Length: 102
Image 1 (cartoon, rainbow, N blue to C red):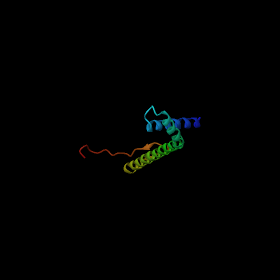
Image 2 (image 1 turned 60 degrees about the vertical axis):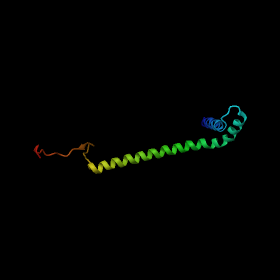
Image 3 (image 1 turned 180 degrees about the vertical axis):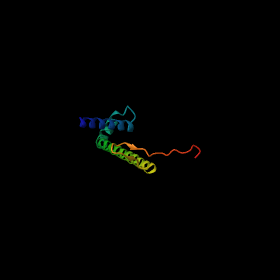
């Protein structure tokens, strides 16, 4: 199934490039020749574009995790690491009551 999708995507890309380079419909033979010549480079280009897309997605996920992790670490540094009891609940520090004018 993957090979069929690869072939179809390569064929459509080659046909699109052939139509770009020979826009006149009257020159059908030259359009067909250019499309067939471009078919081999597009057969190489299609898997490379899938690999590049996968690499870009992986880099994006890693960057998002790094940025989000740095943000959480900065919040812990600024707010302080909360105290947690044995049950996993966050222990709130006791606040002494003060006068309203202080």
